[in-house]
Image (tube, rainbow, N blue to C red):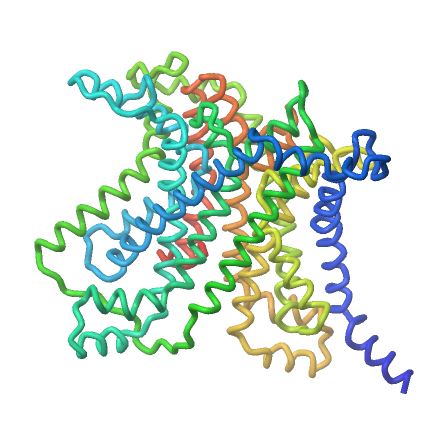
Length: 562
């Protein structure tokens, strides 16, 4: 009997896919669990780097310091304030815009969707920098309005942060709302109308409850993304402290920095993001309904007046959100003097941007290598969690999704603590950036491949194995050709997100490994808006290429981004 059980274990865990499962666990444990564990331990270390002290409170000194000093806990409240406001406004904007675009024959839908996608894929702090060009003290729009005697409120501070966060993040809600609306059956709306309800009443009582899980997912993405963003507050906040920028300052600052406190702040950020994820899951679970979509919601016929009003509202909001991207591109062809735009058309910026070639080369190499790793490992993990269901693969599935809830700055700090010093000494190297990018973006390919496999039966693979083809060869020769669209989707989305990665990069990079997002940020802080626009335009183009390919392959369907 014992021999039979041992044989069962060998057959179940130590074949080709069993080996893949074990290697996957090792990779995730080394690059995710180990760094996060080191981060937790670092937050409890005493001043002398140990965990023992005659004072019982020394190991939690930084936690006591955080919650007892107004400077620190007020920073946490600041983060909640701007992020919750941005989340609320993103929902207020994203839900109706998605509904109008989905249900009404608004002209130019292709432009609307492309503009929203461009806003979605642009690096977060790009919007802050662009709004400074437009509405800052020396901004273009500010100057025009001052000429006619109109003075705008200051862009800087918490108001500007909320504005940029909202315009940058509402596409999350927009995309998730579109996805949710596709799952609502037309017969439900027809039934509501036949019972005498108005179109708004049907939306409020029938459609909205069905898409609440999708909206809550979009809201979660907005909150986690904005809570993790420190580039925008640093550029436009003018002293308005948020937790992410405090982590960066405490960890990087060579004059008075406190790595122990940075670790504590990172743990608090991690707690908040994981807490938000758990709350959203419980909320979505309670609000979810089992439904089978036979006929998706169709276009609604409305009067010409309502059509004009709806079109105007959609275009104003979308153009406002797209304006920062357009501003960056246009200003890259204008002559500048420091933060001032002269207005003369020129290509000189592209010819004199001395740091651009190095930053571009670094970004290209890091993106290609990291994406290749994500695709190779992510495809294997996506396969085993679907086709080899057992306790081990269930753990792998959960752990591979964990990076979604880890902020970039937290990932950067944990990777730096774990691999930057003794005994690895990877600080500032390309390898440490690749490790960070890989583990952070691994979920994209895993989710893409696993989602595809759930819809594909295993019969072809089983037939191949029954004919004597080994599991590994069956995977390469039979499965991979079938799942190529999912692999390509995950790869392109991974490329786009790694290309714009800033929060973890700015913690881990050195002068030799400076990337395009870091270069833009550095030029903005130095007041070199011309060079920042040039590098920013190259970055936008670099980020956009994978998305364009994605749409070319899969059609103009925003679901490929979800």
